[in-house]
Length: 309
Figure 1: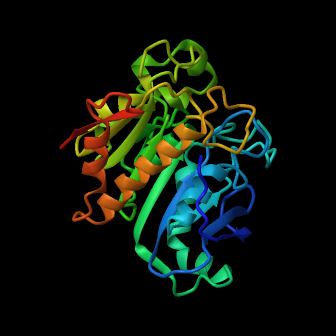
Figure 2 (figure 1 turned 120 degrees about the vertical axis):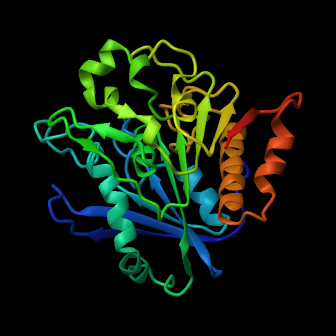
């Protein structure tokens, strides 16, 4: 993955107390060292088995790319992170599925305070253009913010936390529909069997690896593309050819959990998501249409794009 020479800065931890949360909310904020009118990306990490990739310390390749391309990237450490070592006996453990989108909404509600905490960032941020990117369980989090409803397994209550302030929701390798979920995952993570994509009303991009298959979760091919097919439009689906669950290594540089390590694939995923976000923020921007033309039915392309209105 070719790294941009644009200087970036990262500031961490930014720590905010959140009422009702088991621990304070810790974040890392990354941004270009210069420039103004910087749009915002909220980045939601996955669950995973690593100690620190699933926290504000992870996803370096993605964070560095978007900060170098003019974004303020805010990474919360959700309560499911192994870095926090919260007791498994707590309600909603181990996934803390409803507190994760609540973290993102809290960040939006306190965006001015977060910006003011970071030296040199005040006055440089475009707070109207906000995207959210989530990987794996983070994709589930962003799906909830895009309107996916979840029936709380503990109470039977339908949870809807649609967040219209997020203009460009992006979900990478998120769990698919309940009907394709295997028994092992139903047992360990019952909330995964309680999602409903039919209510996911916000425009969104779903990113699916055509080799992203884990029999613990589903034995169906392309199960993780369900969010595109089962939700109302407008939606876009980026299928990444040959990608497994870590998409070449998006969760961290040289991460051992990356079974399909490929810096070119990481760059492709980042660049294509960037095209989607740019065109979503500015309808006159042709980046997304150009991405489609460069991929669809083109020999040797690294992926394909399907859209529905």
